[in-house]
Image (cartoon, rainbow, N blue to C red; front, side, top):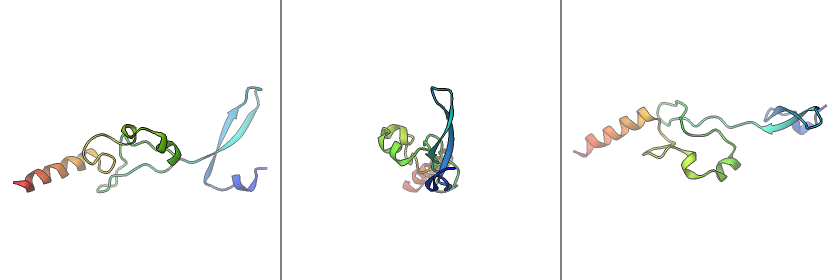
Length: 90
């Protein structure tokens, strides 16, 4: 029977085979939900779904795409925003 702290929904079970051949259960945190576009709410591509501790140790270039509004807007929404800005400057 698992301890009380392992019975909550925030942890997930992972079955791991030990070197002795036994299968044991390890409990790990669930990954956070995917980052979404701020306008259309579609999941962002190129933004990893990792735990905050792992994201903190990841280099900045792997955390989001290197383009204007990278990690905030998806590609189609970025394209629309840049076009609007270019049209409004005239």
